[in-house]
Each structure stands twice: as C-alpha cells, then as structure tokens.
Image (cartoon, rainbow, N blue to C red):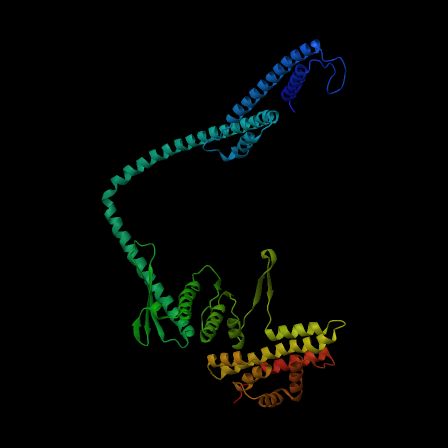
Length: 478
C-alpha cells in the first residue's frame, strides 16, 4: 500500500469516528478500544485537523504519482524505431526498444540511462565507419575519373580506326566458319565412338544411331543436339520412339566419348546410377563398355542396382566394389564388398569360431549361413552357364525369381531350367562328389525344427566353401 492510500484510509477512518461521535454525543468512551473519557470536543477538533492534513498528504502523494506516471510515459514515448536500422546497431537498438516494456519507473530510468549510453557509443562507431566508407568511395570515384579520361583517349583512337573495322569483321567471320568446321570434325570422331558404344548397349533394340551433330546459329549460346536415327531402317525422331532404358543407353553413348577424349584433363569418369530402367541385356553391354573404358582411365559408378556388379562378375571382368552407408548424424562409412559367397562363408566361419556356441546356433544358424553361400554359388553358376550357352536373360530371370528353394536354385545352375530334385542330386554327386549331397541336405535341415547335426563347425564351413567353389566353376552341360 502506498503512502497516499495509507493517508486516505486513515482519513476515512477518522471521518467515520467523527460521524459516530456526532450520532452518539453522550458517549465518551472509544467504541473500539474502550478507553473512557476520550471522545470529547478536543478530540473531535484534533481529528478534524488531522483529517485535513491526511487528505492534503494523500493529494500531494497522488499528484507526485501522477507526475511520475506522466514522466514515465513521456520517456517511453521518446523510444522510437527508425524505418531502417543498420545491422551493427541491431542489438543495442533492440535493448533500447525493450525499455518500452519496463513498468517500474525506477528500473525504467536506470534502463534508459544505461541503454542510451550504449546506443550512443554504437551510433558514434557506425557514424565513424560511414564517414570512412564515404571517404573510400570518394577515393574510388577519383580513380574512376582518371580511368574515364584514359578511356576517352582510347575511344578517340578507335574512332580514327573505324575504316579498318570492315577487314576485322571479315577476319572474324572466317575464324567462326573455321571453328564450326573444326567442331563438326570433332563431332564426327565422337559420333564414331558413340555408335560403337550404342552397338554394345542397344542389344535387341531396333534403333540405329547414324550420326550426331550440333545445330544453331553462331550467335546462340546454346546449340541443339540432333541425332540421326532409324527404326527398322526408317527415319524417326529419337526420343519419341525410345523407351526410358534406351534413352539412358543413348545418353551414355553420347556422354562417354566426350568424357574419354584424349584432351580431357580428367583421368577418371564418374557416373551415377547408369543402369536405371535398363533391361538385363543392356546392363551386360554396359559392363563391357565400362570395362573397355577402365583400361585407359578410372571409372567410378554409384548405383543401388546389383545387376551391374553381377554383369561384371559373371563375365569375369575385373571390378572393385565398395559399400557406402550413411549412418547416424550423416556419418558416412565406406567398406569393400566381397562376393556374396565369400561374405556368407566369412559370416559362417566367424560364427563357428564363437566360444561357447549355443546349440541352436550350431544346428540352425550355421547351416542357414552356409545355405546362403550355396544359393549364391548356384545363382552365379546359373548365370555363367546361361551366358556361355547364349540363352535368353529374360528366361533365366524368370527361372531364378521362381526358384524359392535351394533345390530350385541348383537346377538352373546344372540344367538351365527348373528340374526335378533327383536330377539335381545326381548331377551334384557327379560333379562334386558324394559328400556334396550330404552337405546340401545338412544346409536344408537347418531350416527345419530339428536342425542339422554338425559335429565339427569349422570342418563343416570348410567343406561348404570347397563345395561352393566347385559349383561356381562348373562347366556348361552339353
């Protein structure tokens, strides 16, 4: 409670006491404390005087408070934001504007004093910087005037040489024509290489690439690539008749010769996901093209599609594969990738070397890992045999996709199609020995509830490794 409010409350209290005394003049004792012979004429006169004094005191205090509020409002009204504040004044000006939210007058006065000093210093620094910047610009302008004067002299000399300008224009036109001719000859060399690459990528496509050229005026900054193609011997627009896979193959046919030119400053080629929308035949052709390019420069390919890697391995073309993974907080790890057979054998060997290996891991997990190794070996053998025999890749894809069991995986590897289980056992025994059938059955038993009984885990993994290598090296059945 403020001093003014306290004075008013006391004045009201005394006024009520006087009013009570006026209503009950016969009472001389205080109705509150019970003191006798206190409410007399002298007390009433003193109380009236004190009421007048308290009201004057309350008025004085209220007037002071009103003046304080007015002063605070006027001080806050002085705090304004200009239309544009330099970046260097952003923080001190924000602190200055924040004073408008302060309600306590004492705190407001202190905040205004402190922030005003800081803002004044910052404004002085900005003013000094602006003065120096104006001086720098004035200096640059003086330099520009000097340059303009020099340019004027050159302009006069150019005007005097105007009669010779016609000869210069003729020479320029001759240089442009010669440049266009050289560019066309260079494109002819790239066209031949593009046609060679397209022949390897087109596979069963009926589209022939005859020539590639650039068209457009000399004034154009961008030229148009024109491809002369035929479909079954008839002229046609390239992009309108090509599938997406053919378009990607054609784009590679145009890009790779340019990237592999002798005058290229780069000793490498980087390609991102080139097998997108390609059918298996084109992927095989791409593997051959990249292998030939890799003989003269480094070829780096980024892809999620495993078909390109399989195309290299089934054709026994050298290739190095790395797996790139982005982990937590975008941390990237790169590690070399072995072939699926070797990777599965490595996992099985690591499991076999585990101390105190649980029985369930021995009877179920270990044979399952070995089964994965054999499945990949059978699939690889199927691809090698199929490609050597000239079979349709679409048919083999369908056969492998339908092979949901280990025996069905083995059948295409030996016979080229899905055959009976008895035939697989007989062929496996003939090619890899009688022990191979027992190993195959043990891998199959790992998927059953009883599991496989494996006496020596290390020996079992070694036998599976030997069997997988024999399956991968199997010759084509005549």
